[in-house]
Length: 234
View (spheres, rainbow, N blue to C red):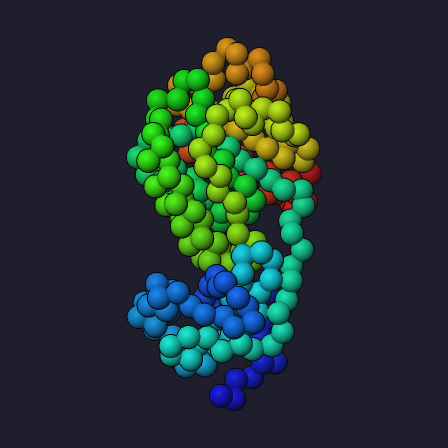
């Protein structure tokens, strides 16, 4: 095909599409991703595509019209450390999708929807299964858009009580102290706020001086946590 592999960047990025595949030794596109690359992105034969298995390994490929052709070597990026988790109480409508999308783009590793005492939104078992599948798909799409090589884990809906014993866990509250790098799990409460017992069960960190919507608070927490881990803020 004559593709110049010396022109390949050393990281996924630029304008090249980024896809998730099952096997990097023989990368195959899903029908949905093939349609997106050929019909939406309108790639031409030989155009670069970065492919990842979502577990830290990736390689450059060339689009060949009906699939991918491997180029260069498989690269493995170290897993981000420490693992960062954001839990958010269920919110209405399509807002959970927004939260998962933005947390994935920002670099959060584990995303946990949960039910708090004052949660208005509650999913039955059937809806939990459907929504978990949907949120996992949203995370996958956001990981490709943001060119992540480590796919975040989207947990099924859980109870707040199952999260409070984790190391480094705090809850977000307007009157909390400043977030630090030691706070590796931040929980964002429901629109109705934390109950007295929840307030007593966890220390609080503040995300700013204004009152934030639940979905905004989750995104703000994620941005601060990743910035602290990456050393972008003191």
